[in-house]
Length: 478
Image (cartoon, rainbow, N blue to C red; front, side, top):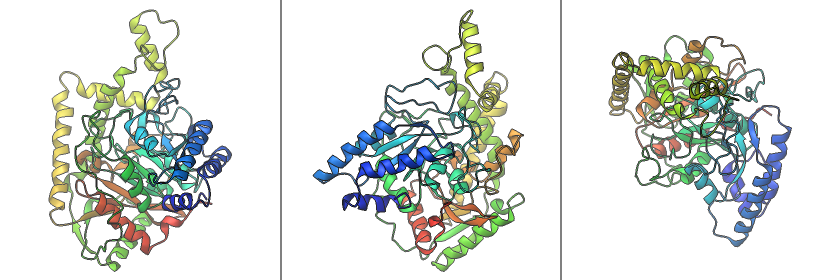
């Protein structure tokens, strides 16, 4: 059953081929037997109770299409009564008293939460090695990383531990692990999915989205989680279309833009070859290709690594050992409480980014760093606006390489360079996808699709047509 897509599982539940309880137990058995370290918390009892409720609802008929479907939840979404740790020591003891909006919408639609997936601490990382609970392994090669920060979610879907998983993307953290694990990952337009109850890393960049086997599955999940939320001031009040409606539309006449900056030095030859073969397939389907330029994309890494740390410095200031989270023992005074609680509770990468952000926001440096980064961010966004005047979609690699070995990056700056092709999309607030497009040295390669604002339907249509013509999305590590 774990090889089926969400669409196939939903049909199977509807036809009474199996029950939600049977399906849920099947996934739980696989999770408990797995050695990928993809989960922080496994919610066996809750999942089986939800599955029983779903079966009763299905028996009555007229239920939402995803009722009874088991999924994995990235441990950055607050879940009422269940530990929500953001993979940190700081929140290792935090039991959320409320549901995030994404969690609430999934619950309302009758889905079954199998557990909370491992991730980089507070979503800060590109390899899932920064977790307080240890690194996640890539199911294609357990000596390699699954990507991050949504590495646990991506590994779970790729290895058949869940039908789909939630993720968050601040600088590529849905698309990059999807690419490295050979699955489909969608980052919607900023403001399309509510951020309420999603533990913040960088508030102007974070966006929730699904990690699935196929584009059709991603469309079905996005139908459930997208929409305006008055609890989230960054949520946009805009009608949500049926993302499955136009999946089968022809893409003949589509104009694809290939940024020359995405195919320069630093891109692995095998990755470049797989991406270009995929682009040729689109030409076979009736699309045309033209070279474009995103001249300011070269500034994406320094811009992101000023903006994001500044925002995380502000967001994580609430983690002080007073109201919730880790608290040091026997503090001498208030200053000692703050200092030791934060020193003990945060990991090295989180501390690094807090310090960078605090420095850049300090008196005398705000104009030189943060303000300049925001101006550059505007230039990056303008590059995309100009490009979309002549093309329908932008394509390129997701990551410069396939999955790299665990522990291979000792220098954090070298790790930051792995996000070179994904950061610009977040800085501009655009939607982006990664879809399986081949292999290099026996490891998956993802093709990145970047669309104009609110063009998720078009991206999903393009991805679905590619997946109808190819079988890369059907490849599994087992």
